Image 1 (tube, rainbow, N blue to C red):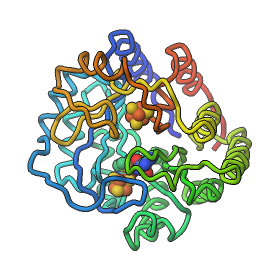
Image 2: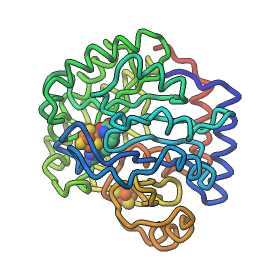
Image 3: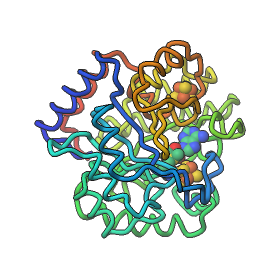
Image 4: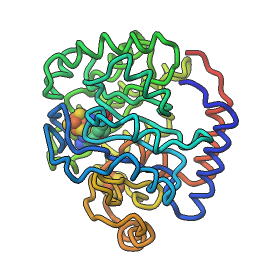
Length: 333
Ligand SMILES: C[S@@+](CC[C@H](N)C(=O)[O-])C[C@H]1O[C@@H](n2cnc3c(N)ncnc32)[C@H](O)[C@@H]1O
Ligand code: SF4
Ligand code: SF4
């Protein structure tokens, strides 16, 4: 993965530290639309939704001034469905390069031109979902032709050499045996790869959650191989500790001590604050402290181990150590 320039890294770490101690969110995830181009088997989005109450691009600037996160995710639904996405990104990004801005998308609507424009507008990292290393992705996502499109557009824009694309593979019972095959595909396409874990909370469906000894054995074997591949390369972006915590999450059936609402939060398409994308208690822009008191301090939900948790459930020294060592490491691709 591309190294963030030193000046920008230090600004991110400084702003993150201030927020940590001020009990403000380090990461904010803006769900810029509830509509989606896909109908994924593991998700509660899918198809068109009411767009009439969506925030306008200029509203995002107001939210940034109040919340001041050092990292922002622009997500959804499918964010590329917003015709004014470039303007939204420009309203999120400030002149000093902050926040570090990640577009989380299925890339069904991505083109080379859009990729270049989004980079110029301020996207630092493009997170692209890939559940299978072949056409089974279309079936899981309910969108015929998606895999073919990804197999053309991803290597094409990766060849521009910016090293800012990270494929995200959400581990479920249906694709656990494909973990290394997905890594092969990322290597073939010349992009980075991040693993995350299925949560039954979105849809209530437990079929995709790993529970049986056989499923857990496959998970262990696959992730052991991934860990040995990580020793030689730098393009798998998880930490080994995160992969171990993912195994623990599936084995014990949850991951306790969630800090949603405090260390990160979601802003919904109509501008409400929510602790996370799977907890629907809504608060106003100026009510984060109330959300922490009413939700985070009493939260016993352990039903996901999504990537954002794997980064922010850590102690402050651990988070700082991992980010600083990440910055100064120069392992080959
Ligand atoms: C909700 S989607 C929104 C952005 C975009 N539509 C996409 O799919 O990348 C963000 C991420 O959540 C993941 N996701 C969806 N349902 C999930 C679930 N039940 N558990 C864990 N991750 C899930 C997706 O695979 C995707 O990587
Ligand atoms: S995971 Fe993303 S692409 Fe799939 S339905 Fe949910 S929001 Fe849409
Ligand atoms: S564990 Fe935390 S982030 Fe995950 S669904 Fe529960 S409250 Fe949300």
